[in-house]
Amino acid sequence: MSQVYGLIGRRNFLRLMGVMGSGMMGAIAGLTWHTHPAHADAGLNPNSALQQLLAGNQRFVRHKPEYPHQSANRLQEVASAQHPFATILSCADSRVPVELIFDAGVGDLFDIRVAGNIITPEVLGSLEYAAALLGTPLIMVLGHERCGAVTAAVQNELLPGSIGSLVKAIKPAVGRVKETADDRIELAVVENVRYQIERMQQKSPVLTQLIAAGKLKVVGGRYDLDTGEVALV
Picture (cartoon, rainbow, N blue to C red):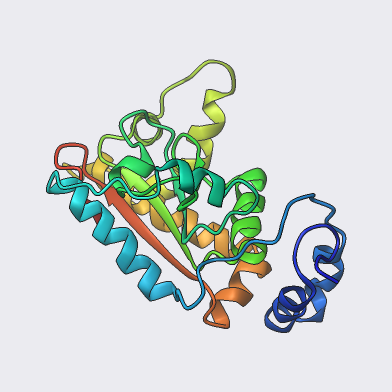
């Protein structure tokens, strides 16, 4: 039996269930996504995945990119299966192109982008898909310097349409920063990263069980628009 429920191999499915416990079996078994089995590179643990990610960023900062996994052969290699070594939840800001700033290629990163790098049900489901079904060992929530969504939340601006929903999702993080702080926006950027990680873990037993089992690491990062460097927070 090469595939179970049209998604993952039987052995990998059983291994996943051993990690996540019987309470998650029904939920996972109900999935009918049609894709080929794919898992993170064998032997790549959460810490080594983080090292690989940060090493790519350092190449970008030093203007010595390797442009990995961008060949025609790579396109064919990942055409029927993906095995990203990291998942990045980042802001949708055009100045934060994730594959570029981490010097990564096709199929290397599971890239989730939304203004303010906030946790929504759809974002959370995407994170769970990457971690539980693709076996990605690392999640980074990446905020960035001078984030417009965070700035709007700090300034409590009245915004048109659905833009206000972004501000609402960030306001609890802003509330953790002193109103008198000179660099309140930048402090709020970092606090928002931490807050969204907390929400992720509070709302997802799928992710928390993988973390407890040592299969997944979740970290926060801040991208500096001026230098291109990602710092852990």
